[in-house]
Length: 292
Image (cartoon, rainbow, N blue to C red; front, top):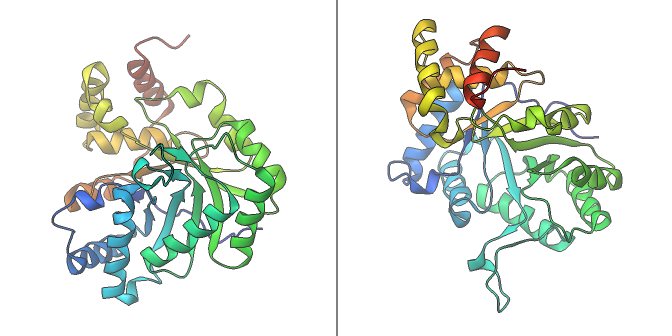
């Protein structure tokens, strides 16, 4: 089975999707300082994907670790693959598509290890469900990568229950994590059975876009968050993340900001707890309808 020590003992994961867009962190030494500051704050999980910055985000991160090798043993890395962008499609179509073939995944894992400059990917996720997935060969490739010590654990992202269960039945190792879109702006997985299904199957939920791309701060929901946050003397974002962590299974937010002060505030508010009534009051505002 997967390494049981791979636990997400942090208030949130640091999302690296926008790393290549940051001029300040484009210098490897400055990025190494930024990574070290996050580690000193107890934030040691970093979420990547090969498509982020068209592979440049992983590359930048790896350059920083090569400048400061002592950081390698302290960072924990999640990365994702199987999306082929149009610019990387070698066919005559230049079409975005998914590839979960054994050969593609083996190459993707090796490439991610090289770009990131680490000896092991702590968690490796299939980024999107592939309608053409050959579950037997995909499962063998993922199991083999765990057995070889190249990845610590395997998971999925954006899968539906029968999609991940079909893969799980073919695997020897357990699917440990599931990254899904979940926030006050998108609470649907809590109501349609998806979230219950992944908990029932023992997957650690990771919530991408936990602030709904800023939508949680708009309109009626935004006004409710602002008032409650002021009453609780916390930030609006901190309250929105506390709403997520109040859910059974404690979905772990993947936070996309790279700003020091904002991350420090969110880390300080990481233990904020809200009661049941507050949670449902925010849900009502998010859905613009009363609880039935």
